[in-house]
Image 1 (cartoon, each protein chain N blue to C red):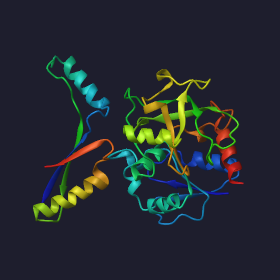
Image 2 (cartoon, rainbow over the protein chains, first blue to last red; image 1 turned 90 degrees about the vertical axis):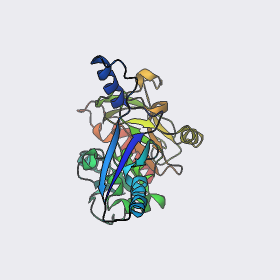
Image 3 (spheres, rainbow over the protein chains, first blue to last red; image 1 turned 60 degrees about the vertical axis):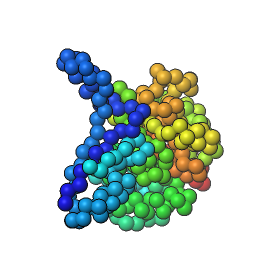
Image 4 (cartoon, rainbow over the protein chains, first blue to last red; image 1 turned 180 degrees about the horizontal axis):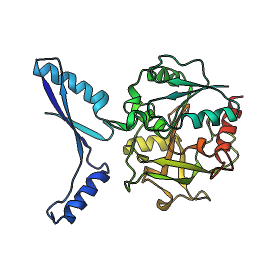
Length: 77
Length: 227
């Protein structure tokens, strides 16, 4: 089965790319954009069919590699 | 004195480091990342570069490579481990050093000489060093040191802040901080001060024909401290 993961920067951590995207969108006359935070998305195919078990395994992957918990949060979808 | 430089796919300062270490009398060996063991060494160096293309996060993939288990064992038994630039990023990713190196504040790859001040000399790297402020080279896109408030307090309380960005007179200010690093941090130690991670490259400034030769002070002193 496939498990989807989103990794984002924690609040308060500087995100210069997000800031640049926000400023560009503002410059393109999307004046309603207040803030952009850029993140990462992972599509992980695992050889486990049980959803709960698969998510437990992916949670371990997030903690050990996919996210750096000093600066990032992750969400398993 | 024996040293070992680990080469990852994408390392590009490994040979510079080899030249620098040999210049000052280290018997250096180059070790491939897929090896499992490191020959008996007094110093292990994780060199600069773009290991594994900086995929996922700088240093994250190298931090899980085969050789790292031996590096961890060596470091945890008190061995000296020096990480320069990408090597510093790898050290934070393995958890040997606290914090993380974020993208530079102004989103630019910075390649220039900077001055750094040595903040602590009670360690094997800087004990008896003959110069307090060194002109060293930096070349990085992710050198913006960041850690939690608690970690910063702990770094300060344990004198773990090794070097900080400053001007040629040792004065610290935002204008001398090239990348937005927290508290002008350019390099830190672990608690036992056997592990040093730093963004500047002393190995790039070891000859007058280069833009500075202040790297000589670092390496000359380092080997002296082993004797």
